Length: 168
Image (cartoon, rainbow, N blue to C red; front, side):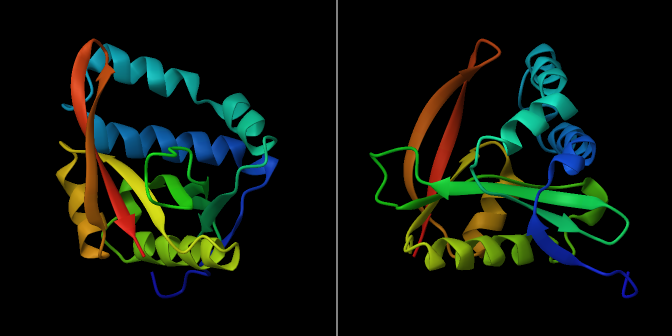
């Protein structure tokens, strides 16, 4: 892995197929057994290359982890969408392809986005994670996130708890 050229850059429309592939692999790995099977498959089916191209045209920042051979992860972020949270910024999604998890790339993506949000005068940042996704919760807690809210969201007909973490 030491020979890889690793960069974090803003996503381009040509990244759409790779983003769809990372999303599919990361979500299958993270949510199988948490999100009901049929609901998970529907969510995955909606997020193909066309969806990603459309998302990129909307203007909300999306950065990718480019390992020289292609996109290995992504992070979507911007102004906090939940006015009830005491945060100016929000990280909507941060995912890596399973083979790149546990190697420090998630931390690098997180830090790059925190710096970008600080540059935009958004010091306090919120991130939501499903409570049953122990790996994601441990990741955000390990980065210093404080749990500040918990809500249930119905996914596939069942309530799943989400935790909001605050940084800054």
